[in-house]
Length: 204
Ligand code: UP5
Ligand code: MG
Image (cartoon, rainbow, N blue to C red):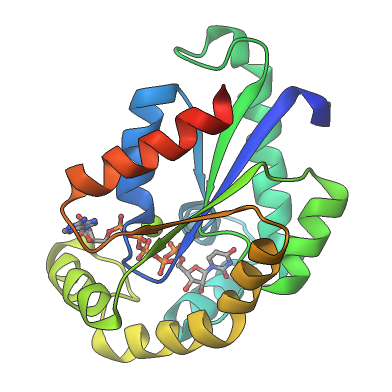
C-alpha cells in the first residue's frame, strides 16, 4: 500500500498499562483502525492450519517476543485489508487510513524493520504506571479473560521482557522526539482525556 496514505500511531506501555482500553476510546473519538499485535498473534495461534501456532503459544506463555517476521506480516496484512475496505469504514480519516498499532514494536529489531519496510509512525503514545498497578489489573482481568498469560508466573516474565527489551524501543523513539508519555494510573476517563488531547494535536 501507499505509505503516504497512512497515519500510524504506536501505542506502548507495560503489560496491563491500559493500551487496549485506551485504544478503544480513541477509535470512538477519531475513527482509527485499531490493530493489537497481541490480538493478531492470538488469532493466528488459533487459526486452523497455522504453522506458527505452537511458536506463538510458547512465546505468549513465557512472555517473550515472537520472531518479528511473523508479527510484521500479520500487521501488514491487517493494514492492507483495512485500507481495501476503507471507503466503507465509518469515521475513517478523510483521505488517509489512521492506524493505532497497539503493543508493537516491543523489540528494537521490529521497530527498525517496520520503520524501514512498512512505514514510520507519527507518534508513540506511551502509557506508563507502576508494576503494582499493572499486576493488580492483570490479576483482576485474569479471573475472566481466559488469557493464558494472565497469571502471576507469566506476568512476572512479561515484566522482565518489558524492562529489558521494550524500554529500549521507547527510549529510541524518545530520542527522535516522538514519544508522548501519559500516566495511566488514574481512572480510564482521566487517562482518556489526556490521550485524546495528544492525538488531536497530531491529527490537526
Ligand atoms: N484497566 C485499564 N485501564 C485502567 C484504568 N485506567 N483504571 C483501572 N483499570 C484499568 O487493561 C488491562 C486491564 O486493566 C483490563 O482489565 C482493563 O479493564 C483494566 P488493557 O487495556 O487490556 O491493558 P493492555 O496494556 O492492553 O494489557 P495487555 O495485557 O494486552 O498488554 P500486553 O502488552 O502484555 O499484551 P499484548 O496482547 O500486547 O501481548 C501479549 C504477548 O504477545 C506478549 O507478551 C508477547 O509474548 C506477544 N507479542 C509479541 O511477541 N510481539 C508483539 O509485537 C506483540 C505481542
Ligand atoms: Mg492489550
